Image 1 (tube, rainbow, N blue to C red):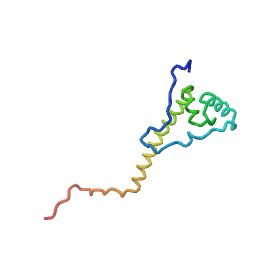
Image 2 (image 1 turned 180 degrees about the horizontal axis):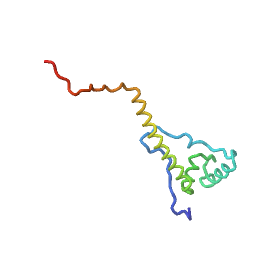
Image 3 (image 1 turned 120 degrees about the vertical axis):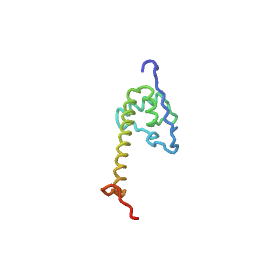
Image 4 (image 1 turned 30 degrees about the vertical axis):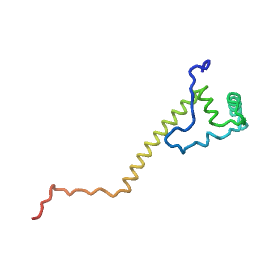
Length: 119
């Protein structure tokens, strides 16, 4: 992004209705020695955020990427959102099939119209 214009602020705190959910992956410390790209990213994020303990977490990397390289993060988020909804619809259809298998068959009406009452 040019000259700090059009920045995107992202807050990874959980303000959803499920207050008990916290993604532990966001708190994982990244080992920069795993690859050259990780080292580059960890060093960049470390220089940018200057954490006291010098550890860089996944959450910190997301924050910096969202602010400085949103065009990379947004397609990932969009794809994840779309796949989540697709999976939800597949789960609904599978649930309907399972419910139909478990429920007793519906009673069929006798052919021939109304039955006469005996008096």
